[in-house]
Amino acid sequence: MEITPLNKWIPNLKRPLVIAGPCSAETEEQCLSVARNIVQQEDVRVFRAGIWKPRTRPGTFEGVGEEGLPWLQKVKEETGLLTSCEVATAAHAELALKYGVDILWIGARTSANPFAVQEIADALKGTRVPVLVKNPINADLALWVGAIERIATAGITKIGAIHRGFSTHEKTVYRNRPLWRIPIELKSKIPGLPIICDPSHIAGTRDLIQKVSQKAMDVDFEGLMIETHCNPDEAWSDAKQQVTPGRLSEILSTISVRTEYSHDRNFEQELDDLRDKIDRVDNDLLESLQERMKIVDSIGKAKINANITALQVHRMDELMKKRMQIAEALGLNPQYIKEIYDVIHDHSVKVQTEMMNDSHPNKEEK
View 1: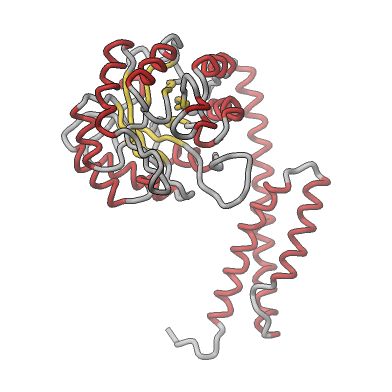
View 2: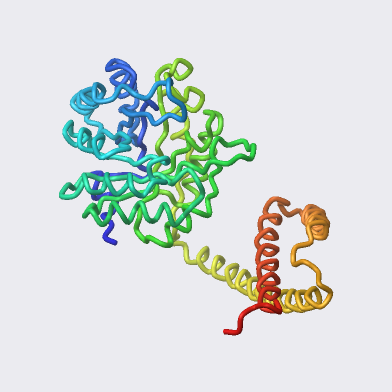
């Protein structure tokens, strides 16, 4: 997959790229007012505004539609900012191109639908417009990669990803759980792919936006998309997660941008030594897991002989409770340990279930 570096899309780019603007384009004056304020920030290079707003239920504000596209043209003419908006259909993409929108993005609901992404990709064939693909609502890395690949096969090389977090039924401090491991894995699967963080949708409240933005920089993301409104509390959509231009300035001034490599040889040597220690610990862990799986096999055979099910819920609950107590006593995050043991237990049950299926007396001979 050919990926054009981000600094080839945006001239004289300084990291991070900042995309800012209201969740929704409400009026021409609202768009221009926000743009006039945020253009004062050197890091802000792109103005964003939702023209079409896919909402969960009908009857809510779903964007002004085509009427708002000339407003983006006026923003660019007056401020020089590049413009961007979300497209959810091929018709949206065609209209955005007609009005000269500089960067398109595909939203989380759309990226979860391969048919919709393919229709947009087909509409973009022969163009050179940059396209950013938000992660799907559900935590499915393959679906995210597939959406990016569909855009790439249309001949688009200026491609990036937007990490906006993942929907969950669990109650957390975030509107959408960040699950940082998923975008980090995306980076390894598609080298050179720029990833922009959308802290507004991850946070859901403006109080958490700075924290999420800093985390994105700490894991080497290339930019931020922050929803900004001159009067956030009166916004027509997602009021709680938008910030004022003044607060945007404060957030950007406090963010520490880190680099992947250091020219300090002493630091690099110290890091190499620490990584060697990590490697040794990991080898011990892998050997322990190998030994554990041998025991799991023995337990599976014993269960088969005793006609016991592979899954024993009470035993698993008891074991997990003890592991959490030990983790807490050792100063480890219990949730972190729970996630690890959930994977270990799921695999153990799978192995024992397969053993039982293979030992079934009615199983056909292969």
